[in-house]
Length: 287
Image (cartoon, rainbow, N blue to C red; front, top):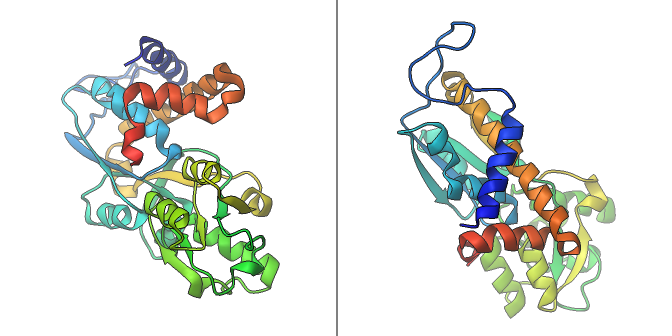
């Protein structure tokens, strides 16, 4: 682990935490004399593939939660899509889940009583194609289009594009194929599908390897987040101090990544990825 990274983590975390000292676990009292909330004994945190999960990955590699709450056991799971994460949260097997805004909103609409703790990033999502004849949304009629799931933020964005360009939000629904990002990238590059609506770093890798951008989500929604951390309202109510500390850690990691991007200049987000992920051997987890 880079000493520079560790130092940056400590500095960013200290800044985000401010003068708050409530993150320490165990018995005791606050300055006002109220009992201090303790962390759960064990939690499971689930996330997916992609650059957008970098804040969680730094927290994982630096063991920030374990350091804040000695004795806490944290299990990390990397899953292919938001569906198993949603199921795990509902069953109580996962306490904190990182997922797209699409699955989060669908779950909420269906009665899942969960709470968004923090967004993970902002990112312009690209709809990619390799066939040079596919240049517009209209060119995708009858084509095979991969998104993570039919309720993913990519699928939502595609329906918005179809509504604007084709007059029918569902015009391309019959073309949708569910694939996780790594498999979708390989399928696009090998010609098994015609288009892939993905996210960083896969869209960058596809572009380098000959694909082109058909459409960008920012052109239809403006700047937006596409990943959020959620937990059930029940878990939040029972572990409010822990949840608030988790939020502060996410904020601190955002600040750290912004600083890394600034330091790396034109290398941009790849500078942050290289400095943070390669130094912790995390990029391999993207297959």
